[in-house]
Length: 476
Ligand code: CTP
Image 1: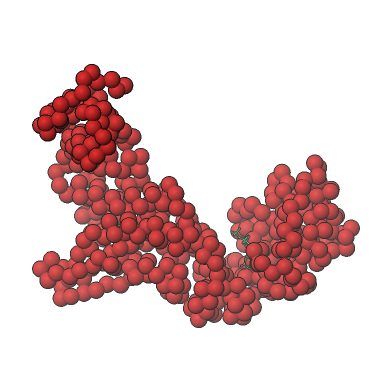
Image 2: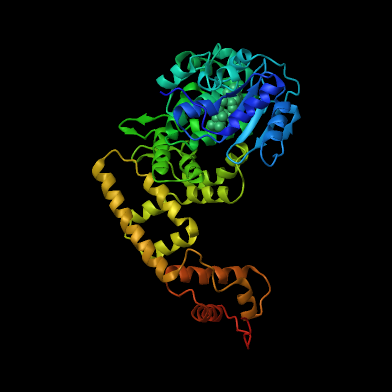
């Protein structure tokens, strides 16, 4: 592990100069220094000074070309300064817990030592001096470099104190362990298990922010295992924790849906799935515990878990304060449809079944197929190969039908208006029934989705119902 070095950027000398003129000792600190040591990209530079952080930011701003505007967060005692290369954040060293988003208007000024002690983890309590006498020297009071080397997340103080200062740090410990593939040091880990209930005082937005960072990591299953083992998951997302466990009656045992879900999640990540596909993986079997039944002749069933799970999605998104727009609808759709492609594999693949799936999945068909491939977690190698091969066939069929019928962005040519105009009807159930009947015929492949043909079929349907068409038909 290399000792972190300040990058070749004149900015740091400028900050040092301004701090010197104000008589403030100043340091680059926190995540930026950690990421320098790890040779990991980092966006923001945190600067701490023993003095007034806002004054220092203003002094630096005056020295920079173009004199960028300083944004002051008076309540937080911090100031932000955008530059061409990085965003600088300034704060005065404080005696109490360091929390960027702390609402406390008054924070007691402290020394660098006090500031470092109240940070979350040893790997985040590293500082690089910006002072003339030792410019660029590393300050490492809590063996943060050793912990980086040994890949360990550890609190600088007694973990009970660090976590009680800000219980979100328990989630952050899991998040950093997951992002960096580190272990949580045993005392720190035990303190999470002991203090887990305190997570309840943290706002849902902050919890979900950390959860999403875990989900965005290269191997999110590791984070979820830690959340589960420490007991945090049971508090922040109880429905997911309920997936855990195997029940056995006689020779019938079902798989552990928690570990299965995590495997699917990792598979989706490996296949390049974004955050929302990852959420679809997390939620695809979420209603299995609620739909589980045992039949002596058949074993365990989870009948209807895909529909129930899809119905739960808005409630889960609301509780977790996740966005309720397009992303949620996509996740909901994938949860609802996740059994369909595999069902197609098992039957002889008819055009009509493929057409229906394309119509329902629309533009999300590729995402659905990605999720479903990820859902094949059978340990039996031959079986897995067979499934994947059959899946290839379904995908081929999907491509064939799509290039013929363009169902992905399917807009039925026969709308309610066309029907009302054709037969001189008012909005009614009958109009809806006719519309559905035409759609069914199109999806069944009896009629092409093209106006002339579909309209002729509509007239036939009308005739069978004793509905005479209105002439002349003017609809364009
Ligand atoms: N910090 C802390 N306790 C918190 C939040 C932050 O002690 N609950 C401190 C840590 O020293 C951290 C620094 O504030 O390094 C900056 O916080 P933040 O920007 O949230 O995290 P980073 O470490 O920069 O990491 P990332 O950008 O990946 O979130």
